[in-house]
Structure formats: C-alpha cells, structure tokens
Amino acid sequence: MISAAEITRERIIEALKPVRDPEIGLSIVELNMVRDVSIQEGRVSVEIALTVKGCPLQKTIESDVRKILSSTPGIREVEVKLDVMSKEEQQKLAQELKRRRESTMPPGAREVAPGIYRYGKMDIQYVVGIVSGKGGVGKSLVTGLLATELSKLGFSVGVLDADITGPSMAKVLGVDGRAGATENKLIPATGKLGIKLLSMNLILEKKTQAVIWRGPLVTRAIIQMYAQAEWGKLHFLLVDLPPGTSDAQLTVFQSIPLDGIVVVTTPQSLAHMIVEKALDMAKVTKVPVIGAVENMSYLVCPHCGEKIQLYPRNPGETEMLEKLELLAQIPFDPRLASLADTGRLDEYEGRAGAELADRVRSRLTAMVPVTVSPIAWEREE
Image (cartoon, rainbow, N blue to C red):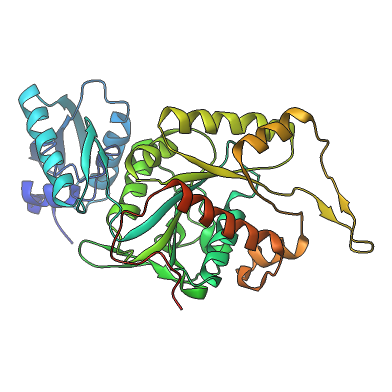
C-alpha cells in the first residue's frame, strides 16, 4: 500500500502516461502537456497545457486526468488546472508530429496539403474503393463477393475495412482471431482463399466492443491500416468505406491512392439520389468511377424462374446507372445473405458475382496503366 508520503512527481507522471490527447492520439506525457505537479499530504494539483486554445475536447482530457489520478493509491484529492501551450511550444510540437509521420511513411508518400499526406501504392497493383451514399444497401456484401470472386480467379486480394465504427468484413469473409503486429507494422489476418484482411474487429479485444471515437482518431486508424500494414504483394486491395461523405471518406479519397471506386446502390429512388452525392465527392477529389453495382436488384421466383422487380423503376434512375457503367445487378438471394452472415461467400455460385469481378477487372485494365512492377498483371496459376 502506497502512503501519501510516497507520492512523488515521478509517480504522478508515470500514472498519467495512459492519458491520451483525444485528437492527436498520443500520451499527454509524451506530448509534454503535463506542466506543474504539486503534492501536499495526498492532495495533488496538476496543470495540463492544451495544444490549442479553446480545445473542444478539454473536458475529456480533464476528466481522464482526474479519473486516473483519483484511482491512484495514496492520492486523496485531485485538482486539475488547464493552460494553453505557447506559440513556440505549438510550433515545436507540430514539427515533432510531422517528423513522426514522415519516419513511419512508406516509400512514395508525399504531403499534398498541410497535414494531409498522399501515400504510395507499395506492392499493390490496384486499389479500389467500395462506396455508397447511404447505409443498408449491402456495400460490405458486395465487397466480400468481389474479393471472393477475384480470389477464385487466382488473383491475390486484400480487404481494408475502413468502416471503423461499424466493421463487418471479418464476419462476411469468415475471418476469426486477431490481426498480428510487429513493432512498426500491422499484419493482416488471412481468410479463405488467401484473402488478407484488416478490420477493427480483428484489432479490438472483443468483437462487440464499441468504437466511440471522434473523427481524427477514425481517420488516423484508416491511414494506419493502409500505410503501416504488411500487405505484401497484391493484385487488388479493396477498401470498404463507411456510407456517406464525411471525414473517413475524405481521408481515403485524399490519402490512399485509389485507382477508382465502385458505387453500390439499390433500385430505390432515395438510394439513387444519394448515390449522386458520392459521385459528386469523387468528382471533387478527382477519383475515377469504375461503375455501379445494383444490389437487391430483383428476386428470382423459386417456382417459375421469373425475375420479380422489388422496387418501381423510373427512366431517370435507369439512365443514371447506364451513365455510370452498370457492373452487375445482384439479385435479392436469401442464400447469398445466409452465406455472407456465416462467412461462406466462397460457396456462392451465382453469375452476378463472377460478372462483377470480370467487369471490374476489365474496366480497371482499360482505365489505369499498370504502374507497379513487382507482380505481373496476370492471375497466379
């Protein structure tokens, strides 16, 4: 049992190491945010220098400091004072953070705007984003189906699950366990057909653990899963993005060298309208559009084989899909949904998946010159 007399400045600093700046993601001790520490008969007063004036997360930092010190043996009372770094300290910190980023960058990375880095393709032939304007259209199922079908053709495939707060690719691809790690690299897990996968569900201690992070931490996690992962040599890396057009999508569009995106939608008028938002984002960020996949496009009658349209069609929506290059129309198939839920997509034999893989591959070879030499653009026999 530690007595009040044994509480020292060194013990306080050591206790505060787990407290992180929520936006930067590093320890407040490592960032030199801990200023004065005074101790008197079990009463501890700590001054924390915030990185910016009016920091929106200052209450979080204060609460974390208070919580961890209050639970430290020997401390009876805690006072937390907040100050702000001087301009010189802020500049020094910015330079140090830039140095850290540059030291962990893979070859080919470059700064395209203050604090925004564009990363190289490493040994990856094609990087493809799978996007949707809204949730609930089956984007992750399409990602899993495309990965599986490309793997069946003999291509080496990786999947980066960029939906940090709602990861599902581990379940869809039937990958259990945890991703590996070395001192500087994440090691993707390997699923059926040799598909490599990185997803938050493979990093968290529990699959049901919620990821309650603000934007900067989410975007940092996506970058780390791309740039600081040992993907090895791949023909395709598929990036499964969260729905919408917020921070996470912008990070991927600006920082990861996408060769193109596949837009997933359903025949609903609302889904098609929101697709245009995703297309507008691609246009603004100058990312090519490979084409569209219409999921839950129709239902095949199990008795007569007739195609049953589940949603009303209108000429405007059909026109939009034709302009986008319709890559595949995937039916509403209970067996496909069941296989995705149980991680057995490799057992699916529908034509739509094979057509999707073939058309994505054909479109990419027509749109994008091969710029990565370590692996030839042929399937592996």
